[in-house]
Image (cartoon, rainbow, N blue to C red; front, side, top):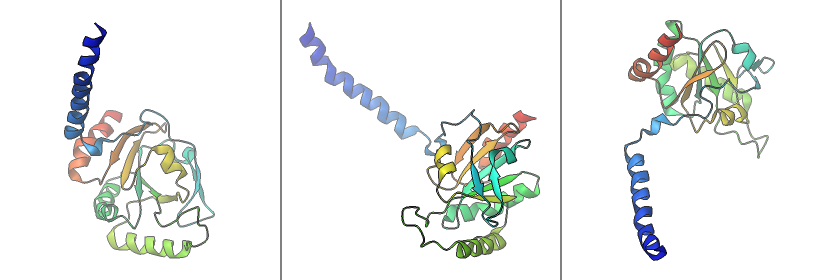
Length: 189
């Protein structure tokens, strides 16, 4: 009896492997979800990108529905979505930037020029559109890691109570907005 079960085991492993690979073939890689869906925004206390004397916390964002868009000037897709995000801001959508600097490495310290970064960001937003009410600087990537960010751009929809309702990996364009964000926003009303 045990020999029959052992003989059947490779076939069972093969079937399970096929099921796993089949799901991977037809899954949507943009549907990577943070484990924080339905949870409140993680606690943070981070500086404003353009004003180091100003600090932002999750409590500052309570009371309004907003998008938190993870971005960086080094990210071509982030730059491509700035125009569309700016149109959304003009329609009244509150968008907060979470600036994710790729060049900064906390292990190597002082080779990073904050003034050059601010100038680069200012130039980029002046040229491509500025959808952000403000930008939170996350040099140590603490908030990004807490949110489960794997790169940029990524966007989170957060409700008035600070609950994360949606997480999108990739750019926001008209198709994504209409199919994903707009229905979620309509449910809030």
